[in-house]
Length: 472
Image (tube, rainbow, N blue to C red):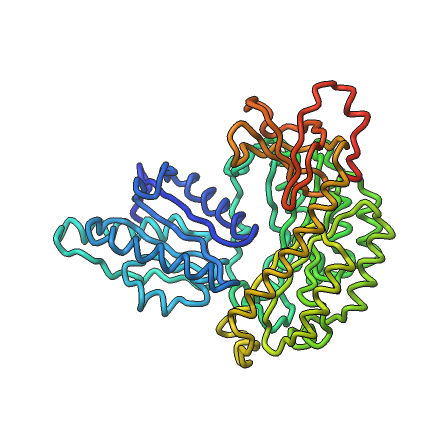
């Protein structure tokens, strides 16, 4: 195998969910292990990789646009390696090769275990083309395609030092999804559920904690279904209890959950383990039973409410996050008003709201997309207003309290840093002390906004005694 990794630089763009971000870290682990070097900018890189998302049309549009710009660059730089990874590579491999012939690699979300070899092959081929005819222009080489979803990227020995934050890390506990949601492309792009053994997850967590990580977030498309393929004795509750034993681990979270798998055991596990974060992402998608049936979500509004009641009874301090899709085929004004009523009743801490866009290959794509774009936009704006009002009201209630905040880095506003509480609330506070990044600090809340809170550092160490960690 020719080795073109020496002094070869790469730049990796990651789109979409947390799982994509973790996949990008695993790709980088493999590249660094084999001598590739990260480039400071895309323009300075010998290899440009796009780790893509297909869940929303907007995410795909951004990738197509960037690939168009890279095509212009490659006309004058034929040795450049361009790779498309992830869900778009899995869903649109033939279209990518036809529409973007300058793309060298099309690698599905579970086929990047040998990404270094794929890049080395493409790099050698492109260098040969350049040397043979420097004036040839556009190079058409999209042949190194790998779409095998049976290959397991978790076989990569993760380089725990390759991560964007010193104290935070993701761990993949399962891949794929078995749920039949009619709007979702994930089962087609990522395959069936495959859970990792508890021992393998625990070993990875130990290595991360030994390298300074204090907050771990467990990832899965339906994370609270973890272990269904490993036998009756394995589930998310038992995994959480095992990881909670790691002494230096201060926070433990998991996303994304499905209402059907929020069990009494899981609720009691969260209540029993103080270092499990006090927020849960539990998407409801709609407040209409009719729409939920069309989506094949597998529950009714009343069943969802029962699950929320169970959780809030066992863990009163927990905050809930949700997803909503507006404008699903056949959604009437009455259906939408039921969604608004559900939001008003449950008062989520945060919601991610999306306008429905049909995804090719899903069963919903065969339905008539009968809600016009303008109405989708109106409904989207209504839900954003409701959620913003709820978040701001709750944040204002917390003014004067002191929160424990894990400092993540600089805020977008100069002179501020930002971090999150145990409830995943975003807090900004003024400081110039860069050494705080990765540390836990006490912040007194001074102002509540729709999407975040403002505060000030509490210098007195005794303030730790007043922390409202379970409420903020």
